[in-house]
Image 1 (cartoon, rainbow, N blue to C red):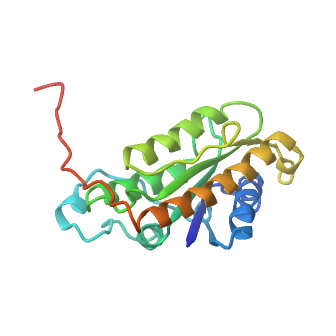
Image 2: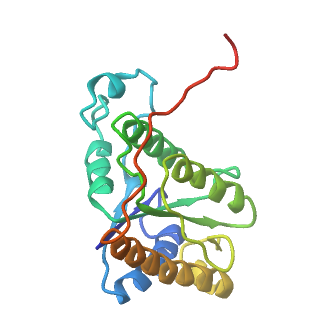
Length: 211
């Protein structure tokens, strides 16, 4: 099994990186392959709501110049996905949002590429606003019928300058427990597939409030 993690921080090895690695280390200790990708290093175009991913249905976004389409395929191939972000004004980073908007739009318009994959948010914050950012990522996951493991608190770790996150003992423990629970859920899902069929996907009913 494999888990791919995305670091949405502009800092390559800041507190978001450290937070993700706490969870990834637990997964690796259970024999799960891991990969960490730095989303924040690129200029990522935002979704333009052009609808071409729905028209083409080729599992791609028509926007080019970044690695979003490569990352979509990595997510499709993975068993589990971690989404890490710093907290900017009580939300996720702009690059992380642009990436997730496009990736999840493509997924939804191509039969649900991430349906029943195990996924979780990991948030780094200086002081407050981490929980709204955590909730923001969860909305993408739950909307896409992903399976979300929990921990013994929200997946938020505190630190200002790079390296401080490791001093948050409770936050560190939370992310380690997340890794253990994610590893267990991945194994449960894998074993369950052998005997219990997944629910069949259904076509989404769409209803606008203004007619």
